[in-house]
Amino acid sequence: MPKTKFQNVVFTIIMVIVMVYAMVCYNISISLGEMNNQVFLMALGELPLMGVIAFILEFVLVERLARKITFKLLDVKKVQPIFITITLSALIVCFMCPLMSFFATIFFNYNGIENLVAKWLQTSVLNFPMAMCWQIFYAGPLVRLIFRTIFKKQLKESK
Figure 1: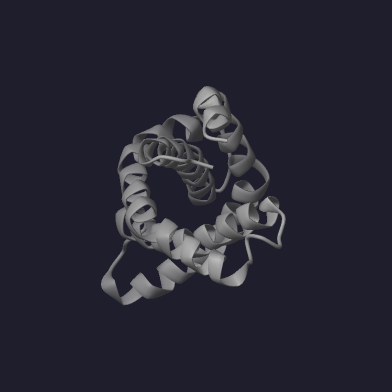
Figure 2 (figure 1 turned 90 degrees about the horizontal axis):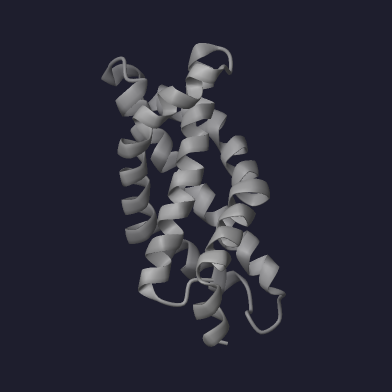
């Protein structure tokens, strides 16, 4: 969807905020054993750190890798655009979930090097279904709608 580097930065920032905030809320809820209104405020405290990490990983590494794989798997001329979008989104989750779970484990669930791998794997397994569903069904469509609304004029001109 983004056509310029600036648009890509804006899209990534919006996506990072929507995804990271939801995933932080989810992880805090798991840690507390329940979802309550405090979770939403607590998540705001973790959002800056995790958001910066997610932006850097996404923008520098993961998006490029996911795009490369997507366009190797799918023939752009033969498949409908929605399949490209879903494949790209799913691959980004496949890479970002373990990476972000690793950082979450270190910053918020670290209790010694001997349990690091086990805690990281547990966090990844717990996060993956939520991250995939949230991305495909909610965050992705919402962020694309917001993005199209913000860049309506520029996107129309580039066609």
